[in-house]
Structures are given as C-alpha cells and as structure tokens.
Image (cartoon, rainbow, N blue to C red; front, side, top):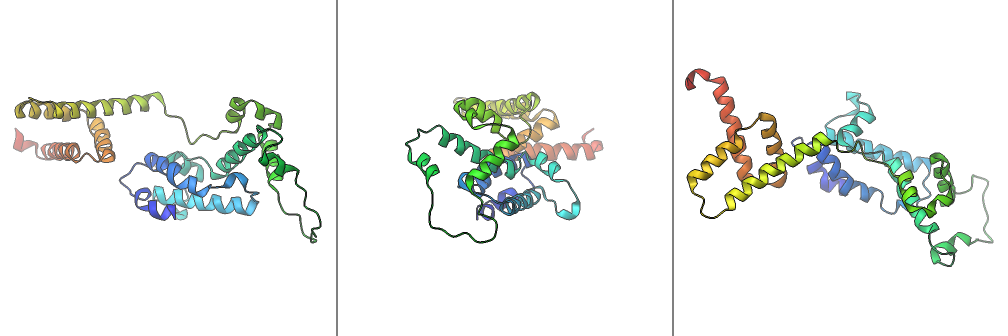
Amino acid sequence: MKWRLASRVLCDKKIPPRLKGKFYRVVVRPALLYGAECWPAKNSHVQKMHVAEIRMLRWMCGHTRSDKIRKEVIREKVGVASVVDKLREVRLRWFEHVKRRCADAPVRRCERLAVEGTWRGRSRPKKYWGEVIRHDLAQLHITEDMTLDRKEWRSRIKTCDGKELVLDEAIAISKTMTKLIEYWKKHSEEGVSIDMLIDFDKAFVNVHHSILYDLILAANFLNDKEILDMICQEVAEEKIRKENVWAFE
C-alpha cells in the first residue's frame, strides 16, 4: 500500500532518480521490511521480496524487462542496495541487541524454551530464526562474540545504499543552496527598492546553464514558484535569443 500511495512521486519523470531513491529508502523500504528482524525467512520469501523490489525500481526509472537493463545498473542509478542485504542487516542488528541483554531478560529466556509433546511429519523441519542467523554469520565470516563490540559489529553488517556522496557533488549542492539563501535574504530585506531587486535578479540568473539547471531542480523540490518561474523565463528568453539572433543585432 505504501508503494501505491507514493507511486505518483516515484514514477514522476521530472524527479531525479537519486531523489526517488532517497524517498524509496525512507518511505517504501521500511514498510517492506517491517518486523523482518524476527522472520525465519525462507529462500522463497526472500526471492519474492527481491522480485517485488526490482519491479518497483524499474518503474521508478521508467524501464521494463524488455529494455534488458541489468539490475546492478538500475540500483546504481537510484542509489538503493539490495533488499536481501538490508534484510540480513536488520536481522543481525536485532541479534546484536538480543545478545547484549542479560541472561535473565525475557528476550533471552525465549531462547531456552523447549516445546514438548509435538509431533513432526516426514517433511523437512520448519526453519527457525536461529538457523537463519547462523547462515548470516557464516556468510559474513563473523562470530557471536563480536556482538560485544557494537561499533565493530555495526560496521561489519552494514550495507551501504549506492556510492557515498563524492566531494564534487557536495560542493555543487552547497553552492546551489548558497545562491538560494542569498535570494531569499535579499527579497526579505526591508528598504530595498524595486530597481535594486530587478538588478539583483538579473545577476542571479546570469550564470552558466548547468547552474541554472541545478537551481531549477532545487526550486522545484522546495516548491518555490517565484524562483522557478523567474529562472524558467530566463531560460526561455535565452533560447529565443539564440534562435533569432538577427532580431537582437
């Protein structure tokens, strides 16, 4: 249901894929993994979650299976890690929380419970949570004793979503927000004449087209219609001037 409610945002072609990925990680994936730390998940359950997630990511990027784009490429585009790895992470985080409790805690006493008088059929025994945890520990090459060091444990089980923000991207974001803050400050000052604001707006939009594009995305995300209309008008006028150079000579 969370996906249905958020599909208008996640499937909007005007929103950048990375921003969709952040929205997905905050809204959709927590609902998908709610209570997953206690699941004795079978391979069939994990496969269904994996298929459901990759279908949502394809919709977000506007792709279908017929496009024959690899899953890794789609995940890198939106910056989202595999739900299988995230499922293992939340399970091991809960395991660490349980192991750090004292032996008399209710959550630890449940480990020593033994059910008697039950009859088991001829099929395979039911999969238990402890069995899943042992498989996770073997897969990551870690032991139960490592839960005593929380910092080391968290670093070993953590699954990062895509690549970390590189320095160039961080600088670009900070420059864009600095220009927007300057605009807001200037237009909120008292005693500023209209002519001064017109000159400031002309200097504000007199930048490289790549910076204008970043400003448009930021203004659209912040829902600042005044800045958005002004920049879009400047872009449209510049395009008209380039197509009709003879009229401005």
